[in-house]
Length: 88
Image 1 (tube, rainbow, N blue to C red):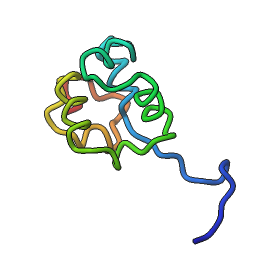
Image 2 (image 1 turned 120 degrees about the vertical axis):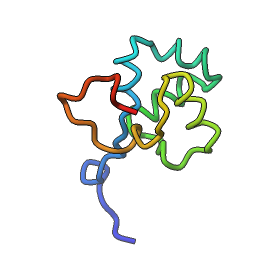
Image 3 (image 1 turned 45 degrees about the vertical axis):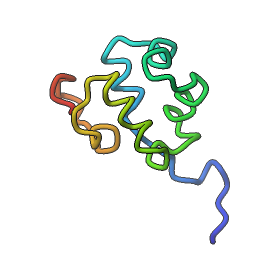
């Protein structure tokens, strides 16, 4: 294991925040729909918790609440000019 300072670590990026904002939903609303605590959602969006390492059930709840049919939309780069309706 190679120790790296926090500022040197590769950020844990995902598209959760971008998808949530495009849907017009707040973290509180997404929390209410999914049953996932607001703090956890904030940590996933900020990269403090890895969305890739959460339970499949959590990903499915997020996908259902955000109308995402392909969960790869959370992790794969989304082109800036691609309309939200085509994200996944």
